[in-house]
Image (cartoon, rainbow, N blue to C red):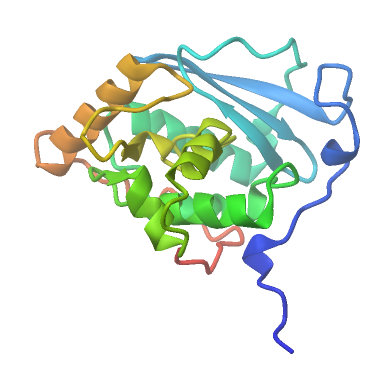
Length: 212
């Protein structure tokens, strides 16, 4: 019998057993100002576990308390990753953070979709149909779209790189304008306009061996 694929396990942390709200004593927030607006994180501290990334322009999150993420090397590197991304820098491999993402609210199939989307290269796009075919579920483009709409980790899992087959944008949690700006920025950087790859910023904390 094959062992279960650890990439598709559900992580049951104290977060997933309590209300997802500011009354949860396990949850904290971190604001990440950038030229696109304020992004943010909701996370569990000690041990660090990322619960959600808030995009610039997305609805405000409830008033979670703040915590000092500078004491956690993964939290620090995640903040740097997002800051570098919105500066137009190629921030590195997002799969580095996979082991610290909380997928407790996702099904196995949704996690499979998210993993497929995480592998879309910087500066490229795929259609909802492409993603459906990649997971062996042709005809499930609507399910792909619904999964993208519930993606808790935009930027790390680049749902903005998934568009409609006719070339139109489709939906996006941060709004269509932000989706277009992010794609334009990536294309410009990938074409060599301002490409400045950030190397050596991800230390050997634990490092996921996933390749997507």
